[in-house]
Amino acid sequence: METTDREVLIEAIADCAKADGWSNLAEVGVILREKGIKYGKLSKFILSFSEIVETKVDETRQPPVVYARLKQDHLQ
Image 1 (tube, rainbow, N blue to C red):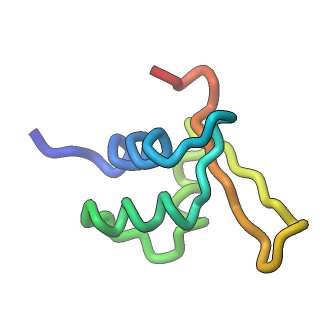
Image 2: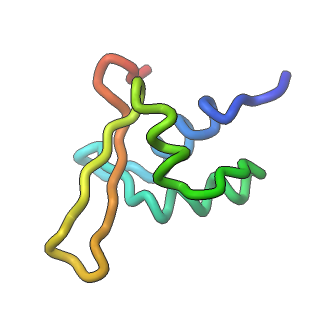
């Protein structure tokens, strides 16, 4: 059975999640590339799954760091 981009993204976010549920998007991107997902610009790829993923930006860090987590109603 072939794994979909959505399933790989869910798994990558879950694997990178810290105790608060947020995952560093750069770490998620590494996993996606390792799994063979071709996404072009990562932020656009993530936005295409906005029904299951939410993001936030930590502007206090330089450069700013983007985090993602699965929306509560889509946690398994």
